[in-house]
Image 1: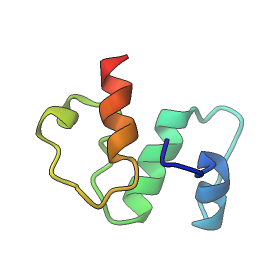
Image 2: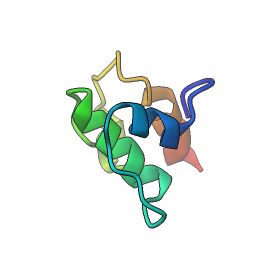
Image 3: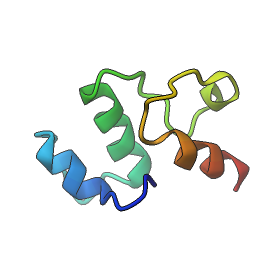
Image 4: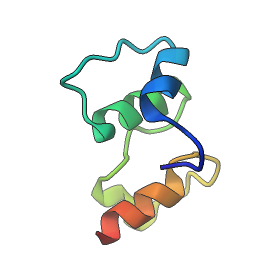
Amino acid sequence: MAKGVDVKEKAKKLGIAVNAKMDKIALVKAIQQKEGFTACFATAAVKTCNQMSCCWRQDCLTFQKA
């Protein structure tokens, strides 16, 4: 996750309805869409990711290696 960023709090601040069933991946994808990025967190798109200003990029790269 982006340093110091609480996923649920960031989602709420962006006006995204957060519910208990949403996992981290779903929340990050919703945030990405709201911020104008492709909702690609934790997908195969990481292999060709060119969204350098996405705050989830580093976390996504790490997530894929796990």
